[in-house]
Length: 441
Ligand code: PMP
Image 1 (cartoon, rainbow, N blue to C red):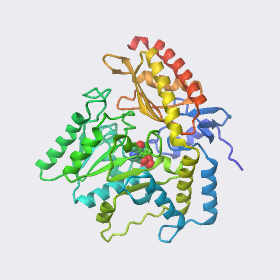
Image 2: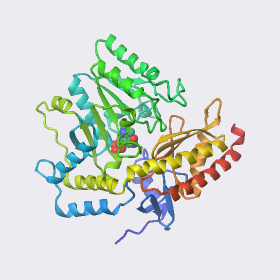
Image 3: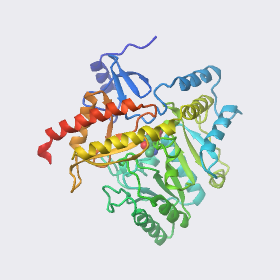
Image 4: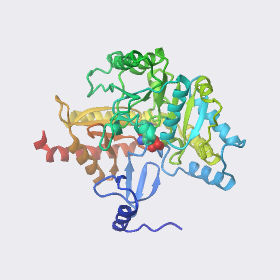
């Protein structure tokens, strides 16, 4: 029988006493959700909310085929990976088939953070080095090893600053960065990677790895300038480093034109980490690498991960891949995302608060500014827009170093009607917020 939703005040009180205060809740008035379907969430009163936030429930909330696969396998068998099992091997083959050669060795883990932690271990084992290059404002996970690679955390509130083995490269942000031409600045931005590599060389070492998301999410939905990743990878590889693409947010067809984000840039990483959308909400994640890097890691120490790659997770992961294929969701991401992008650009033409609209497929960002020339971040306005679209029944989040970027990354099950509904809500919200915040401009 379904659980009865408790009164919100009671939940808030219990959270306060029994859960860590380091956790946060979205919105001034937090939502109490009880059900999800497609691109919608439903609260305790049965009200529907259009979900533009959840890039984990990728093929749609509670997709029946994914749920059934998990239920079936839970009733059949769940064990660790020290036994032979068809599904786990089939799943590894299916995933490898989505990746370019020579990325064909897979490790299954339980979260994006674990995937990046293992990627770090692989790179350090392969190179015999410790130092890592990361992009400014990057987030790669909540494990200690990943906080140390995440300027988003270590440079933020409560952060302890940069660890000696971490080296931060300039974020190639064509809107807010030092160079503002997306077509012509890739190589110039990559010179900062070359500079970090040169500093390491002067210290008698080199990079173990360069970690980068294929498009940066927490940093504010950044699409790098053309040629940036290729030039950055060249610099890292010339110094013997391993290139790691974090696809935890952007992988599995979200960007529409390609299945993986790195494919947009015409590069092949040495290690790819994936997570969030992989199990449609079930905790499953993976690292893919080359036989060469994998061989350096197999030094005699067993890699054992209690839950990673268990048959239930593998069945769920396979079902997600089946649904992506059968419902042609990558193409849909391109199609619906393209329509959304042009709708957002049309809003930008009418609302001075919108400084920039960017993205690929269903990975989009709308950067709000109080002054278009000075590009002054409109942080309070972004928060107000988030609350104002919520009043229309639309959920979106804000992020970026100044928390002034509206992030749009819905389940790929979102429809054209939903997009039109959102665009109308955003149009109204931008008008109201611009009117109330006029004195800030
Ligand atoms: N990498 C990126 C780019 C992420 O956005 C996240 C999660 N926000 C992670 C890694 C960590 O994933 P998880 O929370 O599953 O550990």
